Image (tube, rainbow, N blue to C red; front, top):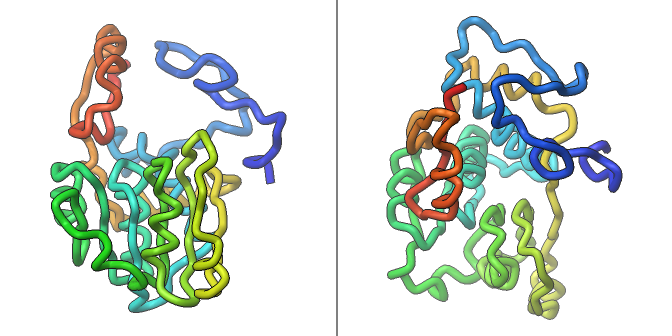
Length: 230
C-alpha cells in the first residue's frame, strides 16, 4: 500500500519533477516502453494507472448506470475504463469543450452547466468523482441511486458538509482511491492493446523551453493534457 504511505516521495510534489532533459529516479519506478507503443500514448501511463487503480477499488458491472463527475484527463480515462467494463456512462462537467471530448470517447449522455442536475438525482449505480470540486461529494451523494457506490479520486483540499442522512437512507458505499500501487505494467498493456484513446485528450505539445508559459495557463478549461517535448 505504498500509495497511502505518509512518507512516500512524489516526483513534482515532494521532490523536483521531470521537466528536465535528464532526471534521476529509483530503478523500481522505471518501466520499459514497448516498441509498439508511441511516446505520445506512453505518456498517459501515469494518469491511466490512476484510472486502473480506481477500477480495482470499485468497478462497474455490465449495464451499470455510471457517472463520471469531472471530464478532465483523469475523468476521461476513468470513463473509458468504465466503458470497457460494459457500463452505461454519463459524463458531467462545466466545460462544454470537455464534454464534447467525452461524447467523442463514447459517453452515452453528458450533463453540462446548462442542464438541470436535480433531474439526475438518484439515478446512478456507480459514480467516480474526479473533479476535486469542493461541493462534488455532496452532489454525488444526491446523484447516487439506492445501494449506489461512489469512488472519490479528487482532492478538494478542504472539508465540506455532506448529507449523511442520504448516505444512510440509500445505503451508499463511499470509497477513496489514491493514485496507484503496482498498476503500471498492466496499464502499459492496456495502452498497447489500443482499447484506450489518448489522442483526443492531447490538447497541445510544447517544447521544454516554453513550459513556464503553459503552466501559467494550467487551469484553462480547454486544456486536458499538454505534452512537453524534451
